[in-house]
Length: 431
Ligand code: ADP
Ligand code: MG
Image 1 (cartoon, rainbow, N blue to C red):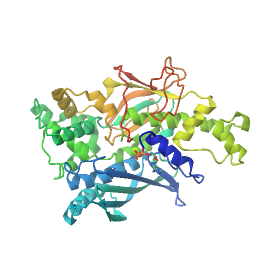
Image 2: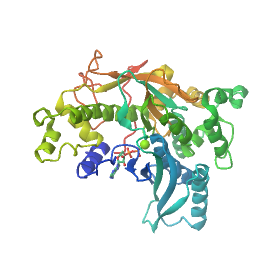
Image 3: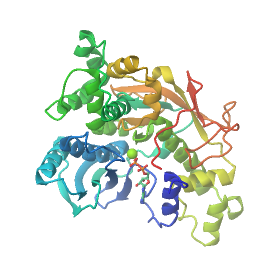
């Protein structure tokens, strides 16, 4: 399987699907299905696999239940939606008994109950070997108000909620522990312990999330390593912030951070560059001026309704058309919001905090772009800006939509400029 990338595979699946008009299918954090009620239904699903996404020996059933709900609710938050209901399918290997399931469900309900998301169904099976967990969450938002990945424009500010890199550092600590290295963290003083920066920088929603985490699930102790591990296992989706951001007209594109901004930002760049082409083509096309796959559709007599909508199709289309320069990004590594816990643990262990923050993933914070001057809620940090990589020196895109992460510059580098480092950061990929 590894010869074909995750996104190429999804692109192949997407290419085989006919999406009804008005529906948003594969390619964003959720599918969007308009309803007669004037609301849009949002649907997301995620798979968690033992030894791939978690180590059963190191996670409590409660933590795993919490995280299974959280990663899905986070995709609803990423559209600016309100989560409404959840469904859980679980394949249990031998050795996990009813008590384990009770504890898993307690963690699941703890997180989903916080957002008023009841568990309404699912499926249960035995598994020959590993534990598999699949959760689906439904959400809703007013018609047309979901924030897509594809709305970013040159000049937009790139912003994130909360802190980056905590979860990745927490995972590294878990793996270190699993490998038998029990190195304690030194140099953690009382000033950090009281966490005055928390109230200053995070606002009420983050504080609330932390209180929730400390209620018996997190083995809560005040040392930074435990805090980072708890951020890894007990992420709190940014549901309220997502809705606040979606209500701001200046917020153009949004997604949640599951694979690290080095990877996730490229989805916004690809989807946004491609939708620019699609919009131009929609408003001003003749069969002769259309890029390859749209020309085919026009010959089939299916234009103007049938325009490919998947991120990869659209990126391919922008490449074929040659009529639009792809988008790039500039990220200021000094502006990254890093928690005191991350700084302390990285200083102690010699880890690169910026690298964990951009490449690590599983923060389940929100990554969004906004027009300059947009009044951002508390808890958001500006980390960079979207550029027109066609007009920025050294950033012209030659090859949008490549399977290993999107637009690349003329000399082969990615169309993200990391200000403050010569490194080329990559996010997490599943294959
Ligand atoms: P996220 O990290 O936000 O959950 P993914 O990267 O997992 O998003 O998926 C990207 C897009 O591809 C989503 O729209 C998702 O629904 C879709 N997708 C992923 N795998 C499949 C699949 N096997 N079949 C159909 N759609 C898929
Ligand atoms: Mg997502």
